[in-house]
Structure formats: C-alpha cells, structure tokens
Image 1 (cartoon, one colour):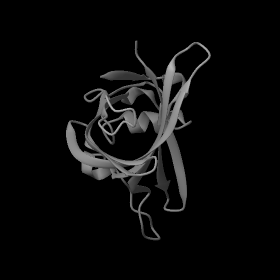
Image 2 (tube, one colour):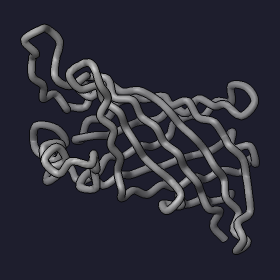
Image 3 (cartoon, rainbow, N blue to C red):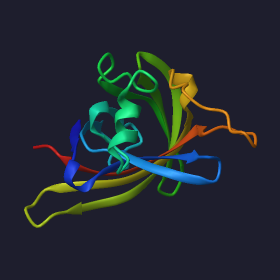
Image 4 (cartoon, rainbow, N blue to C red):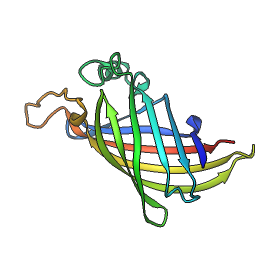
Amino acid sequence: MATYKIDVTHSEIAFKVKHLMITNVTGNFTKFDATLQAENPDFTDAAITFEADINSINTNNADRDAHLKSDDFFSAEKFPTLHFTSTQINKLHGSNYALAGNLTIKNITKPVTLDVEFLGLATDPWGQSKAGFEATGKINRTDFGLTWNAALEAGGVLVSEEVKLQFNIQFTKQA
C-alpha cells in the first residue's frame, strides 16, 4: 500500500460564501494536513484523512477572521480543528471521481460528497513522486452548527448558508 502526504506548499484549501446575497467572500485555511493511502495506481481504493486548523482561517480581513473563530461560528477555542475521513471513492468516468466521507466541524459529523478530478502523476526535480487532485463540493454551514446570521431589511440574509469548497491538492508519495 502506498502512502501519500499532502504537500502543503503546493496545495490550497479554500471556500466561498455569498455575502449580502450579491457577492462572494473567499477564504482559506493556511494550516492543514492530509494523508492518502492507496494500492491501485488510479486511486480507486484511496482512503483519505484530512484536518484543518480553524485558527489558520484567512479571509484577508482580521476582524472577519476573528468573528469566524468566535462562538458565533467555529468556536475555535473549543473545537480547534475540522476533520474529513473518506468512506468511499467511486470512479465516474475518465479522471473524475466521487469522494464520499464524513466531515466533522464543531464535533458535528455529517456525510459529504466531493467531486474530484485526478490531475495526474509527476516526478519533481528531486525524484519525488507527486499526485495532483482538484476537488469541489458544497455544504450547508448550519448543518455543522455555524448558524450565526442577520436578516436584511430588503429580505434575505447577510451570509448564505451554502458554502462552496475548493481543494487544489498535491500529494507526495512517501518512501
């Protein structure tokens, strides 16, 4: 069985949420870890674990980041990490997969499915074998206890419940 570790220098864990129902605010986590284990070279038997440090959330606005870490959202002091553990991977067609797993935020675990594209294998100039993936998906933040919001005078809410996820990941095969 081959083990791959995420290459944090060449990976990005990002999200996007509608604000005022008219624009998107994007953010990412700057501290995270992931492991992929697979025997099959096409990763059809992959088992993946992922963890992100809530305190590393970055939306390019210190006040907003502090609010997201507060009890209104992630409660970072009580729940410092979020976790994902895969439960199944299905090859759909070509290089496209559906990755199912359990996502845990604030000690609430819910099943999620991500659309994954396997971007290929390469060997870097130092002889390390790399595998690249792009994954996208959506979650409802209120399912995970991230319920803070404010009603708008004209109708609607300040922050959308839907969160779009975007992962650009490079894994390094371990010796």
